Length: 155
Image (cartoon, rainbow, N blue to C red; front, side, top):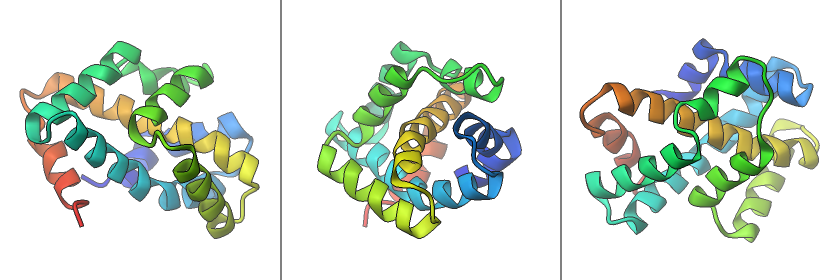
């Protein structure tokens, strides 16, 4: 599963750009930098929740409590994003402030964006990815597709 391609095709990158007043290319560059850390955070969170299918299900259940597929739907529809919910989604994945700060600084430098813009984008990106995963998991009986993606991030 190539999440960046999915975000492009679904309009997620354009939604991020609109929400943050960025060019789509700027949002795509920042997302490209942030996605590996977001996915690694998913892997690590699933491990903390018991690992394997059990850990993934608990993580998806936590996202469902925050809005499920609707986490992405509102932003994609141009209705804006609930920053507090986006921050909660991110905290489930990258809960250590120093890790977030380091990632934001690194991706700001790599993408050429202002660190404030990058800092606003990180939780929104996590929310979009979580919403996409919730929507997909609702239509499939298992999370093998996600487990396979996250297994690639073990090393």
